[in-house]
Amino acid sequence: MVKLQLEFLPYTTGYVHVQTNPKLFFSTERTVKNGPRIASIFKELVADKYANRLCVKVPATWEGLQACRALEAQGIPTLATTMFCMEQASLAADANCTYIAPYVNELRVHFDKGFVDEHKAFDFCAETQRYYENIQANTQLLAASLTSVEEVMQLAGVHHITVSPPLLRELASTPADLWQSYCLNVF
Image (cartoon, rainbow, N blue to C red; front, side, top):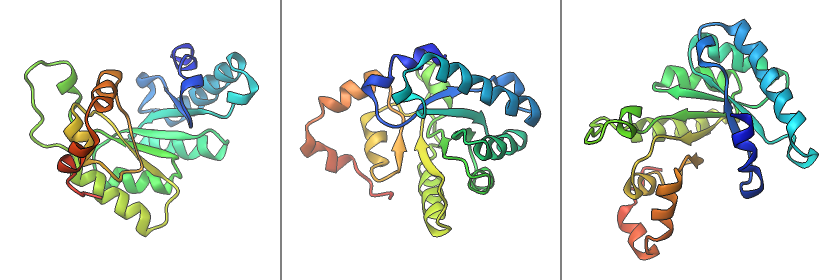
């Protein structure tokens, strides 16, 4: 995964994200060991100008969030992923995660043709961002699992979003005057 992310570095700003080993998601100790290993591999393979552009993705279990706290204390930026509720969001801010990644849609929408998530997490994204602003948290929201231009536009104002290449191409071809009709002003 590290080598794949290296391909994106020249074309992006900010961080690239690499997932810790998901088999470790219930072990704080093993996740804390995995984070620096990923960072070491990354720094060994990149030019100095990119060395500080890695953010380590950690599942937002209790153990994972404690690992995020330890990794952040070591200077390794973290993203708490698979974020579904305010309790997780609050703990992530307390752990000083750099980002959280709430999934707007269940991951199933990307693999099961015809499946439509009836419980999209737009409200959770908005509630979390307001909460972070109210408590002046450093943690930022990076919404994930988006499937349409309409969903991206509904998130206008969120800190960050993850957009797949096909969706990015669709966004680029959407006339700007149509964007306003998509926006729901959630933020």
